[in-house]
Length: 130
Image (cartoon, rainbow, N blue to C red; front, side):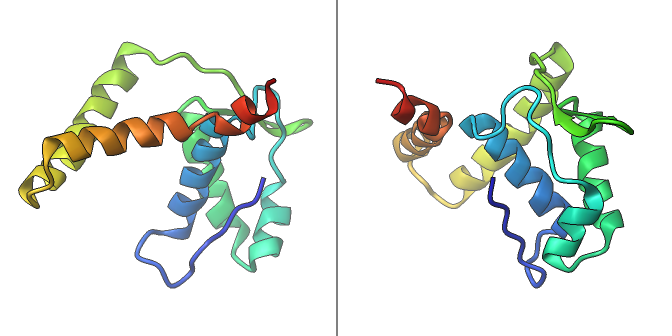
């Protein structure tokens, strides 16, 4: 798994880390029981404070995507989408779709983009499958 952070970007570093780990899970790069680097290792790799990595991992833990354990560290867990997640996700999606509509992006292009993004997840797994 390759992570990249932009310290000068508008998105906080902990959020960048969280988002990239979520995408790696969606892509199938990280699967159930996949270990994540320790907070100190990841912080040293990026030259950032380990509390920043800890914040990203804690957010992933609260969202049910990883389990934190003193012996095993951070590990990806399988999490089915529950009704609460679906409601929160729908609200966030509504805002993103509203932004597209407010900027005059045609609905058919928005839908095509959404489908393309969805199709891209797990493509690494599909490419390995004969």
